Image 1 (cartoon, rainbow, N blue to C red):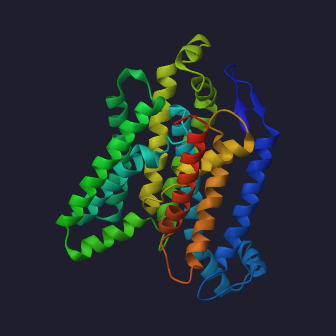
Image 2: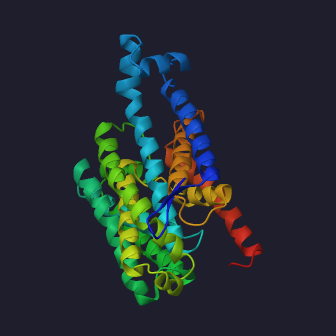
Image 3: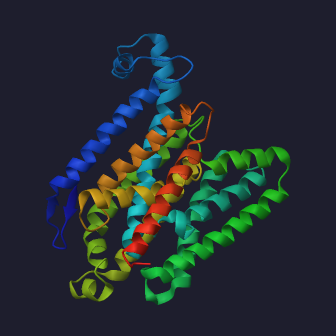
Length: 338
C-alpha cells in the first residue's frame, strides 16, 4: 500500500491498495458473521445496528461484551503474525522464512509452557511468551553470526532451534500434573475462546508502535536488503541497524500474538506469501499482508465454530497451513530454488 523510498518520499501502490481493500472487506464481512454466530444468533443487520449503538440491551450485551473482544483479538493476532512473517521472509529472502519455521513461535510457546507448568498467572504467561520469542530470535541471530540472516543456512538454524524447543516443551509436559497439562495443551493449540479486552488491548498498543516503525523506518531498507547486503550498503542503507531493528520488532509482534492467543500456526507463513503473489511487488508488503493475515484468522475462527465440533482456531490454521506448505515446497522445487 504505502511505500517509502530511501530518500524518505512516500508513495502508494494501486495494486497493493486494491489487495488490501478487498482483504479488509472480506475480513469485515466474516467478522459480522462471527459476531452474529453462537447460542443466540443475531442477523448481520442487527449486528451492524448494535455496533453503532442502535441494538437492544440484550444484543448490545451479547455483541459488544461477549463476542466483540474475541473477534478483535482474532483480527489483531492475524495482523501481528502476518507482520512478523513479512519481516522475516524479507530478511531471509526466502518464502519459507516465517517465524513458525524459524522457531520464534516455539520460543514463545516453550517459555509460556514453563510458566503454565509452574502454575503461573495469565500475566506471567504473557510476559514469558514475549521474552521467549525475542530470546529465540536473538539466539538464532547469534548462532547465524556475521553471515547475515539470508539463505537456507539461516532457515536450517531456525528449524534446528524449533526442534530443540519442541523437545523441551515435550519434556515440560511430562513434568506437569494433569490439570496443568490440560491448561498447557489448550494454550498450545492456539485459541480465541474466552479472549477479552485484556488480551486485545496490549497487542493493539504493540502494533501501534511496531507498524509505523517497520513501514516508515525499516521499509526502504528491507527492500534494498532483498537485493543483497553489498547493494544495500552501496545505496547508503545502514544494514546492521535496519536488520537488528526489523528482527527485534518482528520477533516482538509474533511473541505478543502468541501471548494473546497461543501459537496460531502458519498464518505468518501464508499471509506474506499470498500477498506477494497478489501484489507482485518486492519488499515485505507489510500493510496488505496484515489485512490478509486478519482475513485468515477471522475466517479460520469462523470455520472452527461451524465445523460441527468446537475446534481451537489453531487446528484449522494448522490443517490449512500444512496443505499450503506442501504446495509451496513443491512449487519452489519445480522452480529450482530448493
